[in-house]
Length: 138
Ligand SMILES: Nc1ncnc2c1ncn2[C@@H]1O[C@H](COP(=O)(O)OP(=O)(O)O)[C@@H](O)[C@H]1O
Ligand SMILES: [Mg+2]
Image (cartoon, rainbow, N blue to C red; front, side):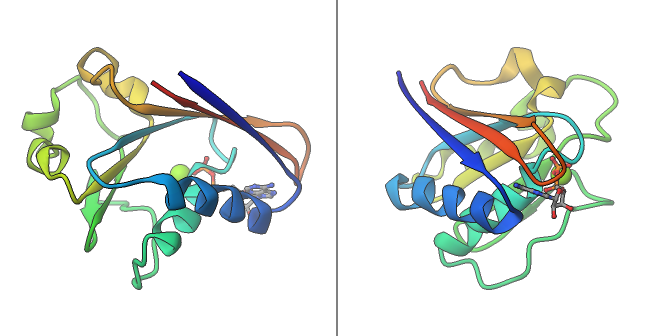
C-alpha cells in the first residue's frame, strides 16, 4: 500500500494532483473516488483525463451512469438506486481492458463488488477552496 496526500488550494491544484497520479498509471486500473458532493471528485477526474490524453471535455454523465472515452471511463453512480455488480452495470468489459482506466464517483454504491486491487482517493473539504486529497494504492 502506498499513500500520497495533496493539499489543494484551488481546482487547478486538484487537477495538477490528478495529473501526477495519471503519469503513474499504466492502464487497467480502477480508481474509486470517495467524498461528499462538491469535494472535488469530478474536478480531479478532469485533471486525470487530461493527463491521459482525453481530448473531450469531461462533464458529469447526468443521464448515464458512466461515459467511456478513448482509454478512460468516467462513472458517476450517484443516481444508482440498487447495488449491482460491475458486469450488470456494464463496466466489466472496461475493467478487463488492460488499456483502460476506470474512475468511479460514489463507489459506495457498489461497495461490495469493488475489486480489492484498486486505488482509493479520499476527498475532504477543508474550506471554500481548500481540499485534502488522499491517494491510497492497494
Ligand atoms: N481545491 C479545490 N479542488 C477542487 N475543487 C475546488 C477546489 N476549490 C474549489 N473547488 C470547487 O468546488 C467544486 C467541486 O466540484 P466537483 O469537482 O464537481 O465535486 P464533486 O464531483 O466531488 O461533487 C467546483 O465548483 C470547484 O471549482
Ligand atoms: Mg462529481
